[in-house]
Length: 404
Ligand code: COI
Image (cartoon, rainbow, N blue to C red; front, top):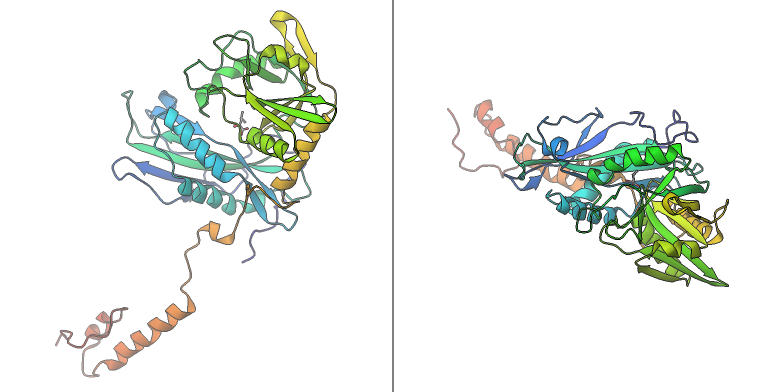
């Protein structure tokens, strides 16, 4: 078998967006039972729909958490997963916020690799900008009315060929004024649906006003930058040749893995990095601002507006040079164009298909004579029923009770 298979010829790789088309082979499911304390082996399901009890806490109380990671094709046709271990660890953190048992790192990796391997032809050709978006999710899935822990959880992994969430052209962003995404001691640091759905009506309103990206400030003081609705925040200051990358440090923002990659890359370029509180008032001093996330990639922000104060900080119609350098370094690692010095990528292998193992040649050899010996070793006068009973890998019986 040639693995991985070539990209499917039926896909319009240049024209994907984020639309769910249900055109992949299927998804992976694994179930956890509180009674056994174990996750089942991953199973591949062709139907995109999941069977879930209508009274499951996931549907009624929002007991769910999710992840988003990506796969690309390298120049040699191989498939590379980007930072799967970091995503496994983040899902465990998000799960703890909503009382979901941790999907062990090894199990997360096995299931994600299996989902991508079974959908390998949907990983775009290296020459295109498309990507395979991978969406692991975990939720309380049995019927359970009390506001207490249910007994069954489902872990599922979906994949979807896609392109960058907001495109790649710089976009104007605005502060969301009349809604706080996360309470000071709340769940803002978790990648759970409850942090996303309430934002939708505000992002819709902002889009009608021409802002396709929205920014959240801290709920307690409304003075510090937290994160964009779909992605993390990065501000960049330049002073001659020296560059400083600033990332908000807050317990109520998602720990962005893309942002963490930018930070590591910035350090490797010799730039200064600061992870700290970022006052809104500092935004006017940034030379470049980027919205960073798995789905958003590195989206340059054209301007930041705050309608209630009439402030508008402009960063430019084109991606700044630092944004471009970070984006291109990350892109090259994700797509296998350069050596991955950080150990961020995993190259998918045929074994990730979890095919049943074929017996090894030595094993076959060891078994054959045993069967022969047993049969041959039988006295021809013994009846055939007794002989067949002994055809198994157990040593030939010397004192077997032979039926008369
Ligand atoms: C991601 O970037 O993977 C996310 O989960 C953000 C979501 C709004 C698409």
